[in-house]
Image (cartoon, rainbow, N blue to C red; front, side):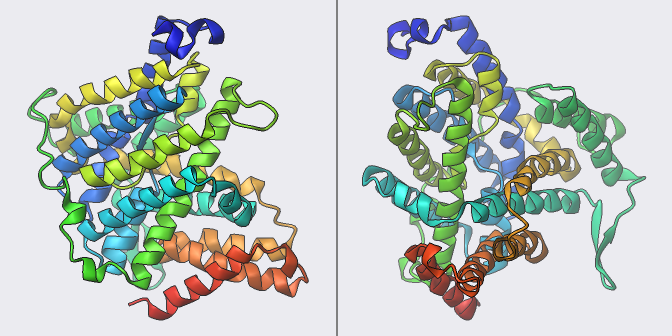
Length: 434
């Protein structure tokens, strides 16, 4: 084990790697309860999604650790799960089983891109500003969902939305949770989001806002309601423009989110040499494989987590950190009785959504707002996602306006041919959207 992972080479040890793995797990454990809540809104069985989430995270992280030997953990991605539930299933009216097949298909395409070395072409085709805008827009969208679920933001006829009563009940609990989580984060606690959510849940139970769980440890919820559901669909309804855009969106967000996360975490760990990432193919293959496996189990896109940086900061330098994190996700399967607290009280998970949104919105600072031809598509991408409650709409509008503004600026030759193809694809998406 020591020789396989290269402990001596990286100056680490079993204890250091295990502490790093635990740190990473605590930093991202919130997904075990947030993901079932979000996908539950799409009509999926929350117990089955809980099990699928833990298994997809464990399997994906294990593949990353053993195959790519990176201290990077995977789990169903925030933003992509929101797009799955609110954009695809609720917004487009696509059955969740069909949406799962779309996730599975995007994973296969991702594998194909990785194996055939096409990824560099695609990475170079999409302008960096649109990648940043997509990340920021998804962040605002996730935060908006958290505010809405907690009752902090309510629908209002005169102004579309308004502030709820934050001095009573669930909104007050969510505000308490947000304050506590922010304090944890500002103080530099690696598992700040998770700690904040747990403390909010405890206060919710004590005050009677959240239900009392029947226990802490229990049996693992059945996977039957979601396992293999992606293949129980009517395949004659699969090949539509709407589903094509869904698959492209899943692929787009997962691909660039993964590439960015891998580079950022690997750079922090000191793996990047001459601006190149060793074993990049294996890392991307682990991510894409986890996406398809997760879809079979019954969850939205599984992807690399930036929270892995907390494990690296704790000393994680090899794949054994990921092996430890994967093992902890398997242990977490036995804590399903706690799920009732989070599922019946969205205010408990709302602070996690809001804080994740804040972290993702930081990419706004990387956009060159002084160039109007860049600012327009970037701004429309960011703004449209929360206002239309759709990640796909934001990406589509940004990809349509980018070629227009660049051509108008006289920079048509700087636009990659693939962007012109996507321009027509997304126009077709709006034309044929039901």
